[in-house]
Amino acid sequence: MLDELDYLLITALQHAPRADWRRIGAALDVDATTAARRWARLTESGLAWLGCHPSPALIGELIVAFIEVDCVSGKLHQVCERILDDPPLFNIEHTTGARDLLLTAVFRSQAQLARYVGFRLSGLDGIAATRTQLATALHTEGSRWRLDRLAEERRGMLRADRDRPTRGALLNQSDLDLILLLSQDCRQSVAGLAERSGLSPTTVRRRLDRLDAARAISYRCEAARSVSGWPVSATLWGIAPAAETARITAQLSGMRETRLCATLSGPHNLMVTAWLRSMGDVHSFEAALAQRFPELTIADRAMTLWQLKHAGEVLDPEGRRLRTVPFSDTWDDQEAGAAERDLLNRMRGPAPTPVRPVRGARSTTRP
Image 1 (cartoon, helix red, strand yellow):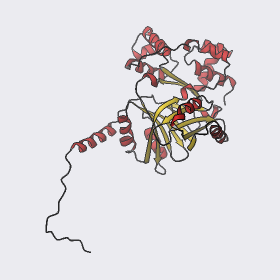
Image 2: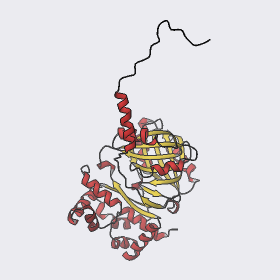
Image 3: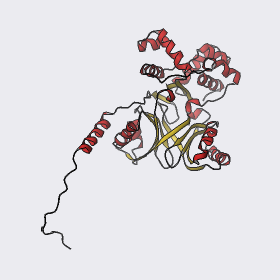
Image 4: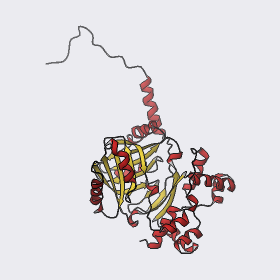
């Protein structure tokens, strides 16, 4: 179990993921050694961790898809094991309701998404069916969510170096490579990053300062959901009038419980994932939505039983971190690529000549 200092420490790192331990300790009224020792204990036990990925807004045009998967009876965990290390899969959730798995995937193009669903997933033993919806807009996501255990004055001590974001250009490959190295240990030193990247410490420091000022790196400091105080995850699919969608999503994104809010391409044009304090809060949350947004119809709902992958982190059934799968929006699967090329070659070929019956031939079919 976590105590109050653990929660304060996680909150502090949510606001300032790379701040030195002296600064973290000052915000928590403890010494730097105590803060560092506490964090080491939390990470070693898998109860808390830091991760990062490139900010989607600075990568370029991306396709975010939510893929529902139906599994053959008895094959669910086999399917999960096969797809766990697929880099484009951001989340893998075993859920209740009308689907066995809910996948959150990110790709560079619709063609990549089609190849993944049509050739990678459909070729796996144990998958019975899939249904895919595209996010037409992502209004909020989990990297913005906070435990909010720190007073405003303490938060101000931590975020001073992130108060004035600058407008950044799209990330180049060197930036993406540096962020990938950083994602393996968000608190590694500049010297360590320099050694692993082959760049000079001065170059690494300058790039990190530029990327941080542009908010080009989305950091996540997470706690295992079973000890976070928010152990229940519910996903709702709704139908909102087109003229009211912008207002509804703006207000939904600001609600304390909301972890994700997106508008979708399918018949259910709105999706929201909420973290709640108890199972009984599910209906209370939905009732609050009905009162606040009477024009919004909740069409479907699902509870997460096991989040096997969360923002690239592999988790156990209690939500403790096991290991990291570095996120990448690029994907190259040789088997899926070969299957697609074979199909294209067949599509390019001439249509088979129809066989015409010979005139006067006697039918062999008996009445």
